Length: 167
Image (cartoon, rainbow, N blue to C red; front, side):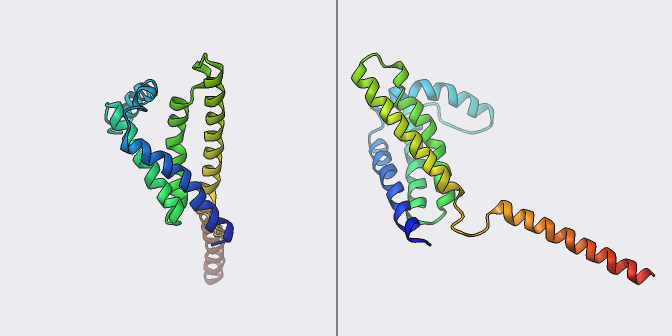
């Protein structure tokens, strides 16, 4: 693992862990902000077959727990790509619900939420980079393409050998 990954992954995870553990311990203050988003997401997820609870406090805790698990995966280097994908996905509703700057009328609050909204977008972007980082090793897509090319080459070789035996 490179030095930058060794340093960057725990740094990315630290901020996520700090915020998520606070919400996991005390979700009540966050639940009212989350309700407009969860009220839209839960019915759609349930129609898709995902068994999500309808209680907003439980959903906030579930989101925080997902962020903690994902951050630990990133920080420890065990399944960092999966962990980053989980945290990035969980930050989308968190950002929309928690930092709706467009709904603020107070200029100071609007400025604060705008800053936090774009900070979260930055985090989502960095998590997308981590989710795609193969640590210098070939990714699944490359390995799949390579296997297909190898199979085509082998099939061509077998056809040539079979024709030579028939002749």
